[in-house]
Image 1: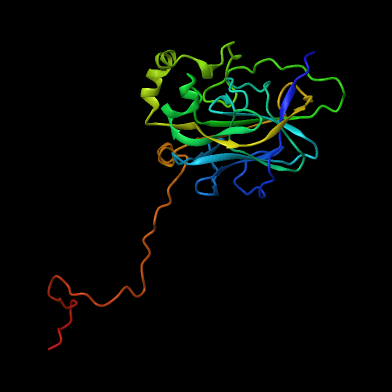
Image 2: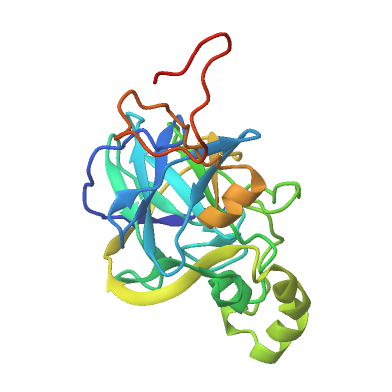
Length: 279
């Protein structure tokens, strides 16, 4: 049985979670850092969607509602945000303290820094730049409860593949990190797909480096499968309107009791039938 030590977050306490959150074991929401607002969740065909604005930085806000620690394995566009591997639930993640709120603002570079998340066109997304554009457009959080007994949990096998995009949807990572792959091979493998989707979807970029200190911690999972998987899909506002995810409100025409002064008519006044005009 292999003992795994997972990365534990030492992040600042955030404001209380608002009604835009998704999840039961933990509340997950997306906060636009540039506009300083939570993104509204739109439910469509059983999926939660948010509208991202290209160029804006964002962060994933998680409030652990449990009375004990939970581990959150997190993915953006099908990529583990801590290790950079093609995401699976059995990978490394953040250990979240009980009844606390945490902001995860970027790709983990080391124990002291992250590279900011920001909405961008698909070819500029981190997933596309590392040759993995298939699952762009989804943010995933796989939540695990802590095992009460002493023996550590074993690594779970990869989950079965489902329709795309999925928050955790890839095979085991190759020996060479995808982030170090040759740019020419990336272009050849993803070029045709990018040309079809560049105007249709947005993704998440690898932005500026920021200070974000964490420590390592051990965590034994209670089960090999997640207690809950939260998926939040995203795209531009225009694309979500086109898909029917967002319905733009229509402006009703309301008659006014006092619209203004009496206008002139285009034709001469005609008397009512069976009446005589005034002299």
